[in-house]
Length: 150
Image (cartoon, rainbow, N blue to C red):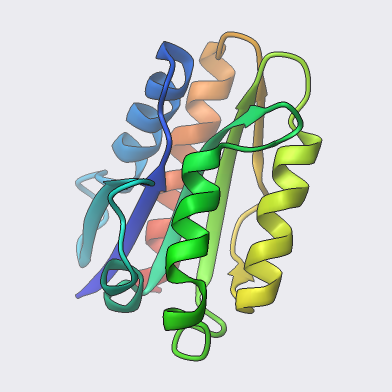
């Protein structure tokens, strides 16, 4: 069975709504064969990363950068997982009030170093998530999970 690790930092209702939508997509009953592990960024470990077949990352944009919690996650796992996770697929959603480009760029710099493979386009959400944003988050989760069992 494939395992998808969702690593998130969810400090706001908007981020929680996006996480809930992503999880709904991943847990679609039509998608059998995927185990989902959801970890807050400050609790996720190198073992979690090593045991997963793919990753879904969620972060708010804070002052033009990824959340410190997600940066801490990357700092903790980078070298222990560096060679063992090359080529694994990932997806990301980023929420911001005004801009998400810097946060997305900072995450992509790290996953480029890890040599993970972007499996889905990033989801960028500004302001309160709309119904379309939440539908896109659900689709992101479902598509990433489906890619693991394809």
